[in-house]
Length: 539
Image 1 (cartoon, one colour):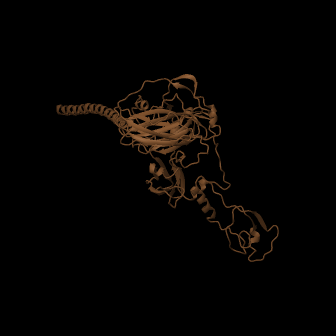
Image 2 (cartoon, one colour):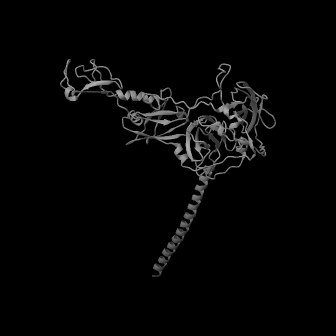
Image 3 (cartoon, one colour):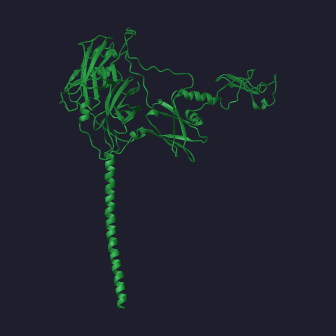
């Protein structure tokens, strides 16, 4: 009995030890689990904090536009820490928004090359007058849950120059003198110029000690009437002012466009990408789920380009639109404004000079139109594919006595025997009555764009917006008698000063008699930024 009791006590002791061990283990596991969670969270935060970040400085060629003009923009995409031109981003998403209606009137993608991007936005003549904001996004400059957007340029659109109310001059502000300021100097400016006169200016870029510093410079020269003196365009204050620090920088926009080929039992697919005349052709493969990505090189194929699959199966494409993500996110535009003095003083530009601006000319074709010439080519193939209609030697459509002939002409009127009569005719001549035939214009089958693309196993998608070069006349070669009402005399987003920190720019004035201002911004290879402004009259 005593022996049995001892055994039971031992068993109870073991259970007690196991029970205590269990509680300790559970407690340890809970603590360890919490520690793992904290560890994981810290790693995730560190991962987001370690994500490289860029900062975008966006500028337009002027501040006020007449509807129907081009808006020219340039952007510097810099490393947020070193303020050096960044190689990180390759796509710039540009959006123009009417701030009165909060409606997007322009959204396009532009290439980013070595930290710079430039191009133009067409301001349609039908745009309502009012205030607009130009916004720029890149994959590494804008993050999820970010409330404020600094890569913006406020602009105003008017219907005619007479509507511009441009008063005042900015109050003096304290200058920011960071250690890495790029000094830019413009020399060679004359006291005044005449119309269509050649202007030659020298740009010099140095550090604070006067040592030459090669830099990337952007320059815009325009009629002061189109300047908004309240807007601060200083790139130095833009990059050195305090902005929010985001604890978790979760990527929000891609630096490539995702797509997918969809169908039953998907496998890896080969794709061909090409422009409208097939002068540029790329090839890529999907993964086993049909997914693929379009990078900056692919997007450079054309403003619109085609993607074709080769499978015998009927598949279809799904291409992501990054602007769907952008439009779904509310942001607050942040930009600096200056206090204006002497608001009763107006810019003395004769607005009547702009009364004879050329309005939009629309040329309409009488034929069938497609967005791309290649679609027209596909349409011409599709209308003959499987089409056995012919015009016999006798001139009748699908004449059973002739048996063959030439292809009918679109819109031409032909006579054709009705099916019941057609089976009884085998040779010429044949008799017929008024109820034995029909006479009507001939029309080939018409395909909508979507039907054509589906028929030929393709999709059309958007690439980088492409533009013509900025117009700058050469009056050594061009006719001086033609009227020249340019209010932007010069725009160049990519001037590179040499090892001596120097560059020469040349341009001709127009027939506009006004005070012109030049706006300059620059970035050196070592993270120095600077800006300058100058002016001259044309009389």
